[in-house]
Amino acid sequence: MMRITREYRVTYTIEGRRPAYTRSDMRSLRRIGGWIICLGLTLGLCESVGAAQRRIAIASIFPVADLVQQIGGQRWEVLTLLPAGASVHTYEPTPEEVRQLAQAGMFFQVGLGLEFWLEKLVRAAKNPALVHVDLSEGIATIPTPLPELPPTPRKGTGRHATSHQHHAAQGERHVHAHGGADAHYWLDPIRMLQVASRIEQELTKVDPESARLYAENAQGVRTDLEQLHAEIMQRTEALPNRRFIALHAAWTYFAPRYNLVQAAVVEPFPGREPSPRYLAGLAQLMRREQVLAVVIEPQLSTSAAQALARETGARVGRVDSYGGSGVPGGESYVDLMRYNLAELVKLLQ
Image 1 (tube, rainbow, N blue to C red):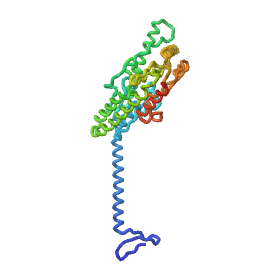
Image 2: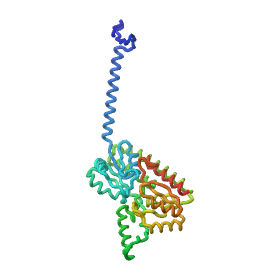
Image 3: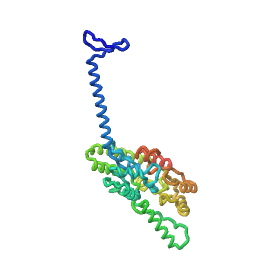
Image 4: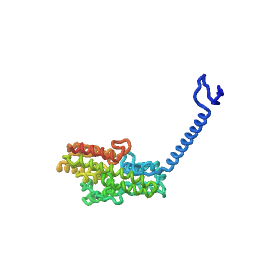
């Protein structure tokens, strides 16, 4: 019920109680409420505009995607092409990934033959506006020599066996650029310093208005990489054992950086089971050179490596070259490398 007082103050009585709101108060409240609504609409509009302006970048593997996201910040939505737990050697793009690439503004690849399926994928995406960045340009590479495999037992002359080896080697060059430059430079934090600077440059070319943001973020990434390098140096310098057998030749850059030795590989051709004769020769090498450690990876079959370890008495450790969401060390590139470091230290102690 409403009543008018002598001071002409308008008040409202609810169940006999008289709150202290005047007509002036009500006008102020309505005005404030209007401001709040307008502010909310404005913020919502800004958020939707910001979301609409957020660009899409795709990286072939998680370690690269993580650096692009850290440097690009909120200006970019970064997707990883290779799913966690998948091997780049056996990966086949899906229609959904073709659709994503068709909508992306940038694509970052490792290069050096790692993404052998990329040309077909880009052709299917039909995205002429896509900015394609090969991060291997300017990287100091290390060659990956083809292993001296024993001839595969087969009928025919020695000449035929040698020819068979040659064709297998040629096929492997197509799959993973073996015999050329090794592609696993992302496992070396020092080379990733150069990658971080390259990502900053390429993002700035596409979005120069955000140059300051990219520069600041890239500097933070480089600081983290330098700290990671120092940590790996400190934890590996006193290891009593420095030689190991890798499941495949992923540690060509990492091992010499930290005075370790990737003595040989279980699968010279990743994804292909090695022959019994090759494994027998590998076991002889391990005994002769007293190599007591074998590292396996979740993306490839481990049966041959496990059998080799049982035969030679070597210890087995699990590392991960690619990482990704939901796997150990999957939060960031630095976390992934710290996970690998912990596994290697445990294995080589």
